[in-house]
Image (cartoon, rainbow, N blue to C red; front, side):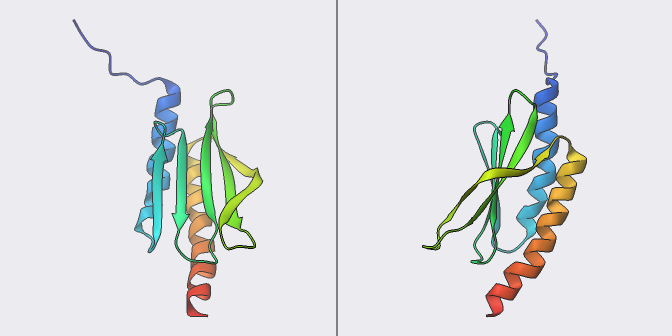
Length: 114
């Protein structure tokens, strides 16, 4: 009996996007973690001035919603309450990685030197 290893389009899309976002692991103090079979991707940075991001898969719309997690008054990073954009394919994911790299370059090292 043959086993069918062909992924459906949702799994393939999730896999492509998550592999693009994994490139952020090469930055200092940045970690990318996956929860619930890649339905939630957390991008966390240990620098104080750097926001975190949470990518949540929408089963209805078939894309990741990107939520920004910013510092609150007590220093804990919390969800801003709205998604800033959507990632529908690996090209948009590459744009997210580039955007994160720019924010990281300008915010993380600036705040670490202060």
